[in-house]
Length: 481
Image 1 (cartoon, one colour):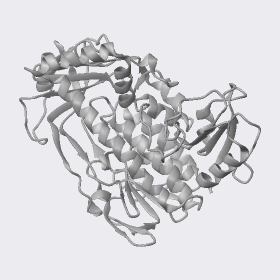
Image 2 (tube, rainbow, N blue to C red; image 1 turned 90 degrees about the horizontal axis):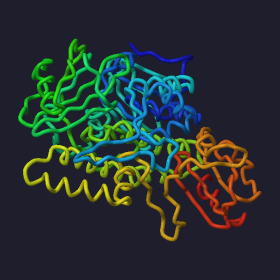
Image 3 (tube, rainbow, N blue to C red; image 1 turned 90 degrees about the vertical axis):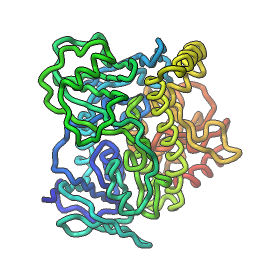
């Protein structure tokens, strides 16, 4: 059965496939910007508690803050201010240049709840039990074929439908890569003994285990043994999970009453192009990697934040369709780096033999060199990425903007909540006339003389020192139309 929210919707300009965090954020952004959007999901309408993602990093929290959602999630999640890696190496998140000096531990379904509520309130047309069987695109649109239902047509389609993306397969896009970790086992269990830390993880010999509270009394345990390479369909029992956990963590914390157990393999794959004509891929449909570092859901949310404002600008006629090409040039390198960094964490954690002294030396270097630690933290948390800038541009162009104090007691990420560009300027010139739907003008709370044009996703589109009014007007014409 297909279900919709609210009255009969307008024909969609964008179809989003997949109602995980990536698809929900993207669809909500588009609807908030006034773009008619339909979200297709092959599952029934139910938020699943079987997700593997359990952390929000600082950059994802900033994106959620720009949508007025971060505080709600902070209220239900639990912050972790230090990340313990290997050989005594600890990364202090208190040094992050962000309002969010922590990792927020909470199950993925809590993120999906707030994103779904926002999308529904914005008018997204939800259609569950809608399995995509094919996609056909032409010069002026895309037709999506749905099992047991009428086909839908839109200007653009975004596949946010996971590792086995029907959109990616229908487009014939390759997904090169390999299995990085085989036979990972996971379960939701009750514990007789409570761990000393919120996140408990360790690797000893051939065993790795990870424990995190699920939020309702249960803990999620994820574990892997190098010597147990069996197919995903092989049954899992609690005895196997307890045995691996004891080997990795020294004890099994009295695990009992598992309500769910599963086995899966973790791949490292990335599609060569995130765009194929009028089709786009985001989140796990575009890239998958090991769970190390908890970067999967976070990277998908940032994919969505990058693509949504560009689609809206093009569909409203404020930008050339060429703008959509920058989704590939900006997000594909980030996805590639995440694959490499998450894989490196796993390989270092599971080091053995001659690799152990190398790991110890790396831990020593990172422990002593602050710039190296900042680089690692920036990659894991997402705050260290910047996008390419054209030649001759101001040094801040393409950089992520941290939350800035604005005149009148406001913050930048509050000003971004309208889904608009924000011009932060020291002067009195107000070029917002006729652009109020896509530009907010703010003043520095300090005496800084830099003028910043901040994109809706929180990156610098243009900057200048001591800018003249004419310079600002030209920049706005170039970026906002």
